[in-house]
Amino acid sequence: MIKMKQANDIEQSSSKLKAKLLHNQKKIRYLTICLVALIISLLIVWLSPRIILKGSDKVELNYQEKYKEKGAYAKYLFTKDKKVKINGKVNSNKLGTYKIIYNYKLGILNLKKERVVEVVDKEKPKITLTGGKEVSVCPGQEYKELGYEVSDNYDKDLKDKVKIKEDKKQMKITYTVEDKAHNKTVAVRKYQFKDDVIPDIKLKGSSEENIYLGQTYVDDGYEAIDVCDGDITNKVQIKGSVDTSKLGEYELIYSVTDVAGNTAEVSRKVRVQQRPTTSGNGIIYLTFDDGPSNSITPQLLDILKEENVKATFFVINHADNLNYLIKRAYDEGHTIGLHSYTHDYSRVYQSGDAYFNDLQQISNKVKNIIGVESKIIRFPGGGSNTISRKYSPGIMSYLTKEVVNRGYHYFDWNVGSGDAGEVNSASEVYQSVIQGLSHTKNNVVLMHDFENNYKTLTALRDIIKYARNNGYQFAKIDMLTPMVRHRVNN
Image 1 (cartoon, rainbow, N blue to C red):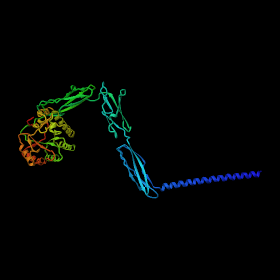
Image 2 (image 1 turned 45 degrees about the vertical axis):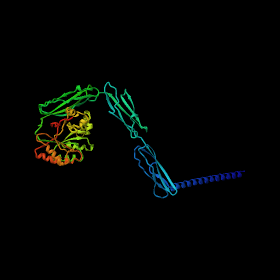
Image 3 (image 1 turned 120 degrees about the horizontal axis):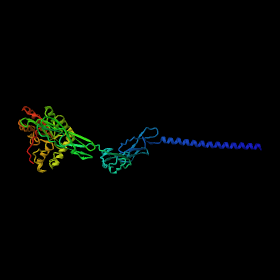
Image 4 (image 1 turned 120 degrees about the vertical axis):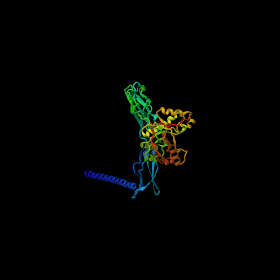
């Protein structure tokens, strides 16, 4: 019995060992198969042709940001990188999803891969508050909206989308706007009840005036406006006086103070000078109308500089790239006078308001260029023109008086060159000028520096030489020069 039991135990142990060995063999075979499959898969992947993208296959691009293609290449076996064909475009000026397709053909295989580019708007709108982020409100008044501007890189007009909320307790205004891409911007304006703005006091007429010895001085006047108090002209105080019996420079100081104690001050200089002789002095005032021009004015200024002669330029509006010529003429000591902004008779002489609007335009332009206000003018066509009658009968009778009332000095001429069309050569310009000169008058010579007026440019040096050889002197027009005026015909 014992032996039989031992034999059975041995047999059972042997069966278990065989079963375990068999199981391990199966496991080893399975693992071997898996390893072989993995190796084969890796070999297939490594040996198979494929397209490899440089960079990410998904790209996010900001609106209007330039798309930079990083490229791709094909790879298989032991070959070097192969070029692929790239198709597709990205329009970064338009939001949306774009696809770049990469193709490579190898025998019957046609490989394809794509990159997705998303053009998005992540930039917030900008709110610009008119008047600033902190403002003052006049005491006793309600806050009045000062306005705002909104700009966005993609949505062009969002101004009507702005939501405005006022918090009177905290004294602030909140402006909120959101573009179509849900980019949100919030701006805050704070206000306080305080009058800290100085009044605006303006002089009528010029801030610098010249009068003659013994002449009665009459102030051109002034006005003062305050944002809180309104018109306070009657509160203006003037310090200083002008003694026209003594030569010299006098300063008048105009000051005004509002209810809150803010004070503004401006000044006017008045020069009392000796009245010049009005006849018999043989002075020549060379004047040039309708410039500046690119072809004539620079060379004309060169001649005047070489000959040390000062002149007067009555300018009109030209392209801003010629502004430097006006500045150059002023810097070289010449007088810049006002002729017209448009030089269009039908517009200039339509009415008194139309004339002064045109005059103000050219005045503003000249002041921006040379930094000072010119009060020396010449009417288009001269004070004696009759063409103005076609547009407004009697207008010249009104304007010739009104410009003087407003502090301007206007100059016609008493020596004509004929260079605007009456003559055709430099010699004719020369003869016209020298025949008109006289030692018994102030010679105001009319010439032009408009484009391609070479006959005047050619004649100028000879005119200067003749004048000097015959005892004449040259001067530029200023506010003390006696006005030379034509008879008014309208």
